Image 1 (cartoon, rainbow, N blue to C red):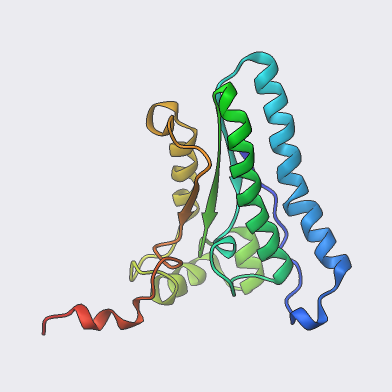
Image 2: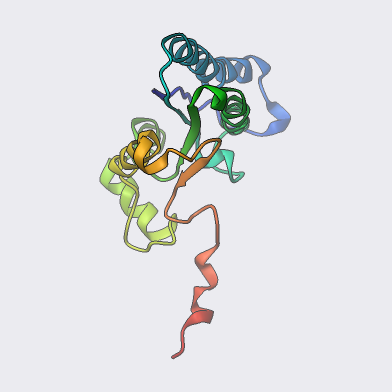
Length: 182
């Protein structure tokens, strides 16, 4: 089961945070995912189905500055909820994981950037990835989900946050020139 819920929230300073907006974001992004896990788990436990629940988190859950404060907090909470659910549901052979994508030209990102998917991919390939010249694709996320859903390939993976970001959140490539020998 792929458990996806997400709205971005408004940008702005933490000093002007609107609690109503934050509650709305948490209601969709966190409560939506929690309810998805709840109902999938109930059904899987009742029918004795082993399997995988995959939750959509975000690179904003891993690295600050990539989303509004409410969005960032909600996606960090999704990762935590998946981990705690993995602890409980492993007893039933149910694996719970997350996918945190970055720079993938999804509808939400393309809409927020107000540019075409190709333009977003080009910018990410230039400045938002360690894999220069290669932006993210929605297929990259789909392949990650297929991997996590596979009992054969990922049957021993649970409580994990698979970050699909071209290495963006794990390192800073701005100083990569120090590795050159010329």
